[in-house]
Amino acid sequence: MSATSANHRKAQRPRTGHSASPDPVVLQELRPGQSVALLKELHILTREGKLNQDSRRKLKQVYHLFQFIEPLLQQLSADGHAPTLADHGAGKSYLGFILYDLYFKALGRGQIYGIEWRAELVEKSRALAQQLGFERMSFLNLSVAESAEAAELPERIDMVTALHACDTATDDAIAFGLQKKARSMVIVPCCQAEVAACLRRGKALQLARTPLAELWRHPLHTREMGSQITNVLRCLHLEASGYQVTVTELVGWEHSMKNELIIAQYTGQKKRSAAERLRAILQEFGLEQALGERFGLAPTPANEGAPPG
Image 1 (tube, rainbow, N blue to C red):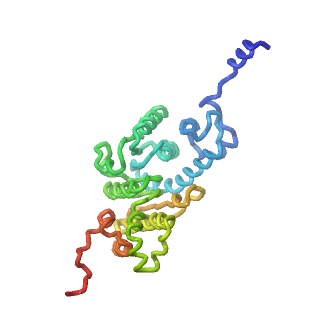
Image 2 (image 1 turned 90 degrees about the horizontal axis):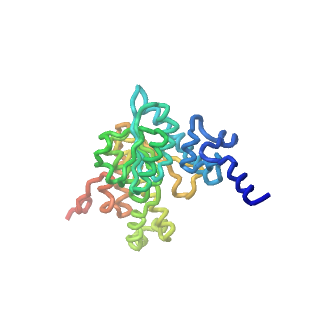
Image 3 (image 1 turned 45 degrees about the vertical axis):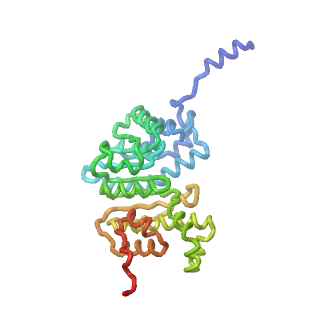
C-alpha cells in the first residue's frame, strides 16, 4: 500500500471527540443526570469517555463532598426558595459546576457565584458556563477578602463553600459567610502557616514554661499543630457566632492535613462557652494579640487579670 493511500485511509477514519459515548463501566460510576459533556470539558473524562486513575479519584472526591452538600441545599430550597451559593477559591470551579449540574440545573432556580483571584481561570469558567448553558452561574475575579464588599454579590448568601482555600483565605471565607448571614458553610481547610509562625516565634518561652510545648518543638509538629489549632479556633468561632458545627473526614482525599470537613449550620444560638474557650486557647498559646480580632474577640486590657497592686 502506498503512503498516499495509507494517509487517505487514516484521514477517513472517524475522529473521536466530545461526542464519543463513555464506556458502560464508566457510566455506572457517574451520578444520575450527570452531564458527560461537562466532565469532558473539566478533563475528568477523556475525549473518548474514559476515566484514568487520577480523574476517577478526583470524581469520587467531589461526589463524596456532594453527599454532604446536597441535603443542605434541599433544606435551603424548601418552600420554593431560590438558594444562593458562593464558592470561594473556586479555581477551575470543579465543585461549582458539579453542584450546578447535579442540583441547580434540575431545581430550575438559584445562583452559584464562583470567586477566584486568577483571571485566566475566571475567563475559562465563564466561557464553559456559557457553552453549557449554565445561565445561573457567575464568576468574579476577586480575592476572598475583596468579595465581601463586591457590588456584584447580593447582601445575603445562603451557602458558602471553600474547598482548599489556602492559608488565611479560609478564614476570609468564614468572615464572608458571617457578614452575608449564610445559613450554611461547608469548609475544607487547606494549609495555614500563620499560627505555626506564631508558635515558632514563642517556642523557646513556651518550652521553658510548660512541657506541653514538646507537642510543637520539632518543625514538622509545629506546622501540624498550627493547622490543628487553627481549625479548632475556626470551629469555636462559628459556634460562638450561632452555628452548629460538625467536623468529619473526607475519605480518600490526598494529604492528611487536607481532608478535614467543617460543616456549619446557622441556629442563632450563640454559645458563650465557645467564645470563652476560644479566648482561653488564644491566651494559652500566646495568640490573643495576633488573632483575637479575627476571631471576633475584643482585645483584653493589658492589666486585666493582674493581681491588685
